[in-house]
Image (cartoon, rainbow, N blue to C red; front, top):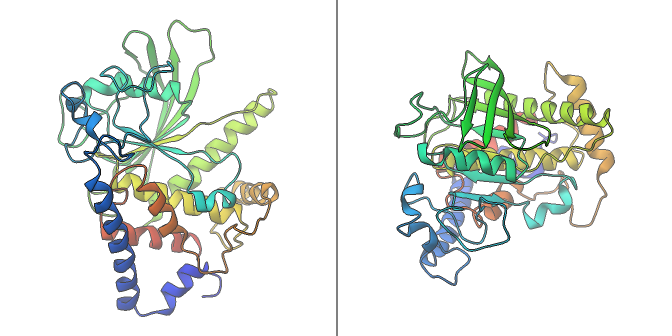
Length: 359
């Protein structure tokens, strides 16, 4: 019990019913603040305004009418200095930054997220343009997709080429699927892409897309095994890329991780919260994280480097204390995209997954 971080020890020390009630109260508190933001959603001067997303020129670019991007954190597509929303630069996506209270508990090179909806058939080109412009190297897709790419599906459409194939988007962006590998009885697929501007001399971008098809909409997986495996695999891939480029004398800037499900809020938020909690525990030296299993050396080395790079400060997270890094992360993330972690079971799954990492 004492091996767990403090906020999980408190959870374990209570009865199942009492722990569930405590989580229910925390989630109710988050939802109360969400309702306050919703009241300002159609006020032009509010940072939480979504008026720009319901204009005639942008409305059809949203997969759902009730999950819209806040203006203050919205990602714009198009390399220009204008901050004005237009049909050409609009995308239903928000940048999710490091929680202010946890910035000293995360590595200096910690990368933010871009939380977004599954690309629509008419926004796939814009999605890949965002990948290039925002220096994205990792995409996490948390929903099953329809193989029919040009016709809108209920939840999501495949927006990438099959293994060995190359697709062209808007004639100037090319995406080649170098390799696809399947894990967990094909529930999780790992795709490696090259992405590049056709007319550019810049090196082609290597991008990892992790596709998890076993997570039901509004629900949770039966276990955290696949999610934890994905987190370990992504970290190992990033480390491999950094080591590969360091041998060439180049420092790799991986940019934000793009995460999406169908709407880009429930499952997306759950993944971002768990990944952030994992990063905090790694960076602040929590000593009991589960290893990667088949990649134990990488896990140990990653944790060692993270520990060496941190500089302890008074406000840094201490795993032996009672600070709830799941609540702190979600409280911050919901200010940047609406309805991150959409349901109470998803909120509980955050705690369960982090607990599984620590036992």
